[in-house]
Length: 157
Image (cartoon, rainbow, N blue to C red; front, side, top):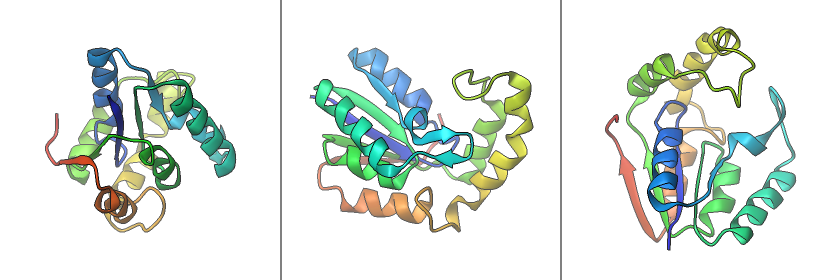
């Protein structure tokens, strides 16, 4: 049974890998970005997001969930059969961010996405030094605590 959680820095390849897994196994895909934000820059209450994750997990016996939110990943990982920590390095993540196609589910236009690129790259660069829910240290904690099937992907592509 496939219940896979993917996590890592922005630009690490989570969405690309999640789409490939969902297609390969014919399973639903939940991008935590789709439920984490009330409005741009304002997170929804964690309890509300937790309920949405639990509803998704309860409604689907097989799935792939991806994101960078440590607090939300912890909820998803509790039901996972496998986790994959995408950690190709900051420079690879930045290169992926620069090459990212327009994401219409996140931005109203390619220009709006491009306007946020410098902010995103700065945020990606801080991955190894931050200590928040989105940081390397938090992702490493999640990875180390998981006792099931797990892998750390350290290469790009």
